Image (tube, rainbow, N blue to C red; front, side, top):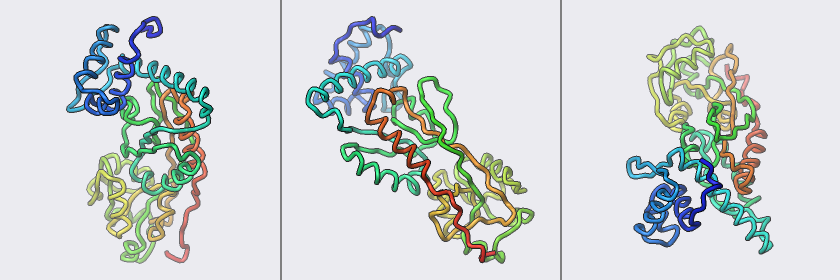
Length: 307
């Protein structure tokens, strides 16, 4: 649909956009200082004017339809343009303020992002940063997040993605666990040990096989959907797990578990919406995350005397 050829009420458009960003009519009404019935009428009037359905109700939340996602981009651009005019007129165009939501895994959020975000807060103190821990890209398409850090390349045309680098990963174990078996091990003995899983056990077994380990799902004796929880089990000496070097390096109680195992790599993608090019606050956070993630120290901390 050619949205630019349609004239509509800006109050209705603003009501729609805030509802899309807040995820519910009640939250949007609070944000705009309106009653919920008034807001609902404005959104309904916009849908009637355009002749499209902009929201679908999922559980207690409102989710944008395809037409809603498309319109939200145009309305957001209109709002950003109006804000730039206002800021330029008031001499504040260099300030970067507002909420930016970053979606990433709980492991990266816990172990890697704190240092990066501390520097960002000094650089742009007017920003409000929210972290959403998930492995799904749907959070971006539903506008639950502005920027995502992912290990797979997105194929959705409305998303912009930049591959930052390849990240090495190894099989790690706590020193206390390996000491039970006399120190570091060889891959041929992989079947003797317990493995810690996070997420799908079948997929985890496949990843372990990529390291040349002869193990199956039955060797994954403990696990959690949370990567942070599973990694804590490893750190506490309860089994062996795959982990990125940049995270394991921050935990001196763990070491690579096998003497003869080489690392494998996986990609790190930084993903955002197309308005990266029009939203200064998103651009600022995107560029800072890229710089910080590229600067992460990947040197493996290993004690050669522990063997």
